[in-house]
Length: 143
Image (cartoon, rainbow, N blue to C red):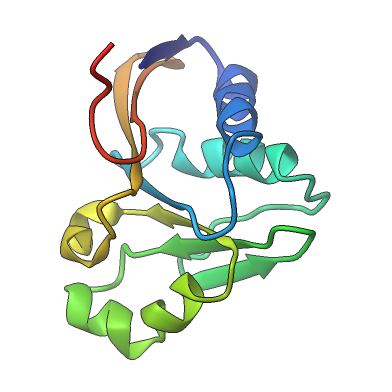
């Protein structure tokens, strides 16, 4: 599914719509450069999951945890070199905790994701315009 957004609030809205569809254990892998809208999208995911919190990038903490009926574990892999470092911080434990794992800078750890991972690729089109390519769990849609 391709979504075009023209500003940050539309990117947040796109994340919220996806967040409403996610169930415990979901992994959302976010791909895109600096300033592409990944954190804004995760703010929307949180709203869709019913989380009322100030969502910020976990660049220096690696993971931020937000709790509700379905928790959100927001990862930023920018500072990690590879999947081994992700497993060293307890990735397997997070996958087993029944929350949604949203991972920024997924390019750095793409080999760690389960097959049913939802991918969201961000493309900056100029100004505030973005193209978001969302691939559902299990791969591209056959429709």
